Amino acid sequence: MSSQPAKGAQKEFRKRDLFYLVPLWVLSLIAPDPYLYHKKEFKRKDLYYLGAIGLAPLTWSDPHFHHVMVLAGIYAILALGLSLFMGYAGQISLGHAAFFGIGAYTTAILTTRHGFSPFVALWASVLSASAVAYLIGRPILKLKGYFLALATLGFGEIFLVMVRESTDLTGGVIGIFGIPWFSVAGFSFDTYLKQYYLIWGVVAGLFIFSKNLVRSKLGRALLAVAASEDAASSVGINVPRIKLEIFVLGAAFAGLAGSLFACIMSTANPETFGLGVTVPIVMMVILGGMGTIYGPVAGAILLTWLMDILSRYQEYSLPIYSIILILLLIFFPDGIGTRLNVRILYLIGYWAKKRKRDEGKL
Amino acid sequence: MSLLSIEQLTKEYDGIRALDRVSLKVEGGSIKGLIGPNGAGKSTLFHLISGVEKPDSGKILFKKRDITNMESHERSALGIGRTFQTVQVWGNMTVVENVMAGMHRRLKGSLFSYGLWLPWIRTSEKEALKEAKEILNSLGLLGKWESTASQLPYGKQKLLELGRALAMKPQLLLLDEPASGLTLSEIEQLSERISEMRQKGVTVFIVEHHMGMVMEVADEIAVLHNGELIAEGKPENVRRNSVVMEAYLTRGSAGK
Image (cartoon, rainbow over all chains, first blue to last red; front, side, top):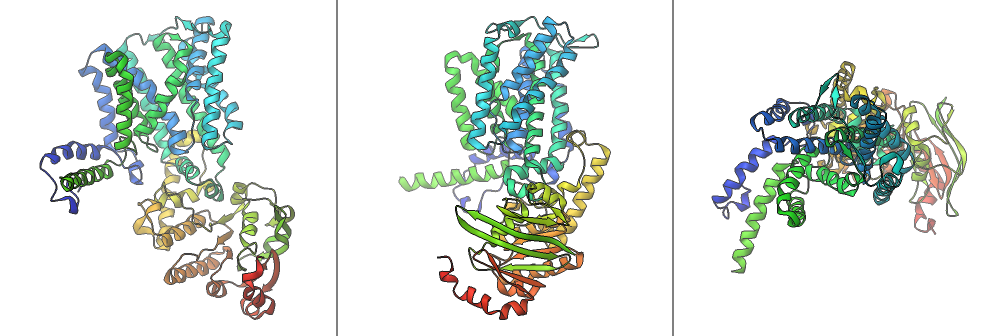
């Protein structure tokens, strides 16, 4: 259906354009349309994705690839949590990196100073991040739109200042070094390959958890809150509570990611938890597609790879990076994974119109 | 006994009295209509009953419980469903999900039981889907169950909103101008649905501009004018009431 051009555009269509269509059409088969009800169920397709993730490091045994994918996985966990809050509940948080930081510092302090095992520290990180989110969220989530964005942004900055100033606890600007590898029951994740499976195993688990949430009563309630809070409370949805629940859940994801990050990088310092992390996560959610669960994961992989590939261009990397982001947002405003069918039809129409315009001018 | 009773309800906006000591009763199992010219305070009264706003003084009793200061979602949990004057379906969801979201209160389970998709969640979600499809079938929307709610035409969205409210299994259903913006045939269909509700044991309280429809479906009608209740009774009596006639005839100058 999508390989056929629109009726009016048929004459202007050149054969060459079909070559663009083929990959786009293939992509559209893979990419889910989030609005269809049955598309929210698990499918065989999900198993293929899982298989691809599982087999990729075996066929591609470059340690650098493993490491980049580990970072992508950590970003994916962060983006998943944020996507529930932003893409589904329709709220904004620009302080998500603070919960990431809280997770990392909890692990760093517990393992290096108090001799806890990383596994115990992981759970402590999750708990501390969600506890802070609960305390912050209760007053802050009454705000909406820009005000919520500013308040969370402020929270992120306050966290950074506190980390930099309380030198005794966090090591100040220098941070904490020598965090041990993550280990469970004596098995230490000390190579990039092992870490790859650790991280992507966690991502897979959280992905299934999030997807279950989204296709259930809770997902519907979140979407309802995003669309109309009045209507949501008219069917008995407790709006402030559900916002708080999902905020805390997102923070728990971030705390988990922070803990794993600290173990993998073996350091924790304040530079890693500022706006430099928040903005990419928000970009991953938006670029991947708001209101999908595949979106943030795809966005995380894409952006992490983009940053890695562009880093060889040194000082030009950021301008190129931003231009690519702007182009992606112009051509895929719904996100790279969302509604590609619609996108294809749009592109066909765009090319056809452009050709007409050019011919008219000549 | 009466399901909903309103006692001496008063609400002011910046010194303007939108409602002035209004007392009303809605009997269980009946259909009650509320009419009045623009600016009479009909919507204000609805907002007070559904909890979007709080009254300055007076009391609202539902099933003999004082709900005057309850939050909106707590009232819905007690069994008050409503639709909105400007249609408010959730356009970011499919049609069937809109109805299923209406069952929010009836589906139990914590965040973790949903995330882990425990066995009882699986069955309850399946049953919810089945029931939602039945509701859509009764409203004639089943053919579009998987399309996005925002893609439906306006009349169908209004029906969907009704379906969502019905999915709550409410005891009292507040309909805020359900016929506005509908075509004549759609209005007919709607009044059929409303009459059906009486058989299901749902009490309906309906605000409407479309006089013909209210007169047809309602058992009793109350008339508001400038925030005061000026008449109450059977449709045919209200129609003949001279005070009501006057209020409607002079409606052009009533706001001044």
